[in-house]
Image (tube, rainbow, N blue to C red; front, side, top):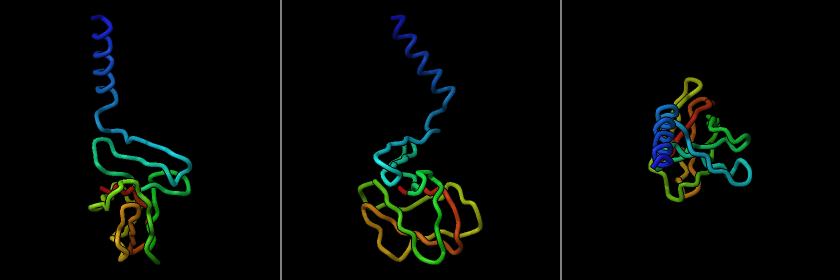
Length: 116
């Protein structure tokens, strides 16, 4: 019984100290192109910068940018969680697929984007 109580207390302490749903879940394969970063408790995925594996991506204004995802379904939409400039990011004209989405901005901008 003492072991069970200690485990429960450790779990409660962990929740109080770290919060619930505050940390993304990282699942990595081989190289940044296969990095999957999921927001906790969401059927979603952060877009990942293929050059360095970070979740800060650049969306350009000159042409559509193609982003790979691992949802294995056509995403319903996207959320901009952090934007580093003045720009609007919209869907590109290319149809989204189970593996890729296409975005374009009215000015080159860096942002953290979640697709769901």
